[in-house]
Length: 56
View 1 (tube, rainbow, N blue to C red):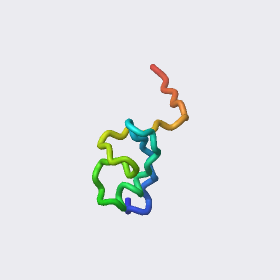
View 2: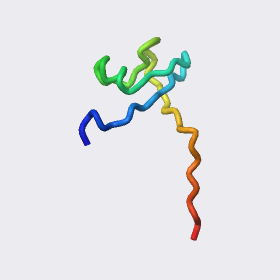
View 3: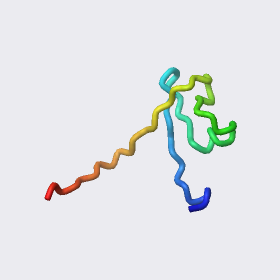
């Protein structure tokens, strides 16, 4: 997969609650850091789709 095929992932800063995309993080040097406040703890936002797996 090339970089163009990778889907954009959205993260949320734990401190200020700002939504940060993976594209913004790459443009700022690739470090794990909020682009708004600079806090270094961000969490990945889960998709609202529920996956069902049969237990058979």
